[in-house]
Amino acid sequence: MKTFTIISLIAVMCFSWTFSTAQNTSPKQKPSFLKEKTTNTTKASTSYQFTKSTGTYADLTGTTSVNNNQTWDDPEFIVPIGFPFNLYGKNIDSVYFGIGTGAALSDYIDLQTYEFDFLIVPFEADLIDRGENTGNSVSPISYKVEGSAGSRIFKLEWKNAGFYEENSYNGTLNDYVNIQLWLYETSNIIEFRYGTSLITNPLINYDGETGAIIGLTDYDILNAFVLSGNVANPVVVDSLTFIDGTPANGTIYKFTPLTIGTDELKNDRISATLYPNPVTENALIEVNGFSPKDAIFKLYNTRGQLVKTISNINSNKISISKDQLESGIYYYTIEQENQQLLRSKMIVL
Image (cartoon, rainbow, N blue to C red; front, side, top):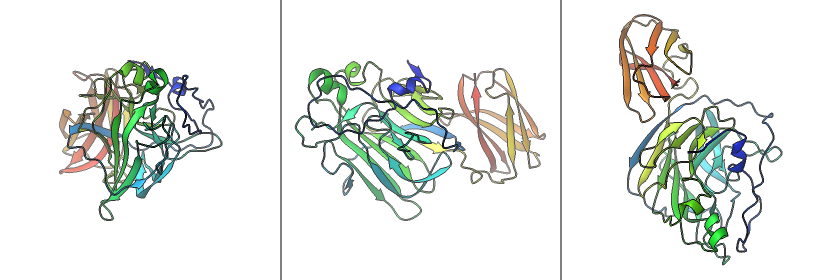
């Protein structure tokens, strides 16, 4: 399993502003961004809880075309969401193609510095229209918005998308994937949904890697929620890595926001400080802004499973032991009188 820093991200998250209709005959030269980010200081204020489930995948109907029946390779588009969506605590109204090589979307793109704040990555592999060699698109990218105001869902679909590397090495475009991104109004939940796929040579299609990059991240990869391990039962890691395999038909990966500014806090005067974080042995959470009588501390893993509970807290300082906790990302809540007062993130090493 290969992991990445911002330097090695160069080889994966990149820009290409040229659409090609000729057959690919040599490996793609991927331009990269090398500059450190200096112009935008937006900070992530949201943590996400990951869950995996299965459901019936259905092709979208009644959609608006994104590629307008043109073949695409390293697509460059702006797609309106249709409602305000809160991503990592930042309100956005569109998603931008251009970061990555097929199914990675950013909150914006600064065309002077090639910067962004946050990424939504349903399936970052080098995808291409399967009609590339004929000039006739057979891999439409399209979107629609369903539902009534307050409960709308933005749905974006990559249908029958092929793999650049297969075309580059073999001159064929037989393999394919079907992917949808769903963004939920108000709850700001993010879902990646996967349909049928054909992967006959994953080593070629994924350019020597084990699979695609799937997850969420900020620009500096300081608050990443990226999936690692087998596609059937992945875990969340806080670095860029490739998942193992291709998600099966009906797979749903869901990212639920845990903290959005102070909106998710029941009382914006309440704050919590965890130290040390990451936790190596024992830690202390100091909570301020409320009387802790009969409060309850709950700790969840990234699958949403409750792994630790401390009841009847009567102090503003809560001692936490890493006993029996595997390394990884956890989310803790503090509750009182059946009301959740605070949610935040903890990392265990």
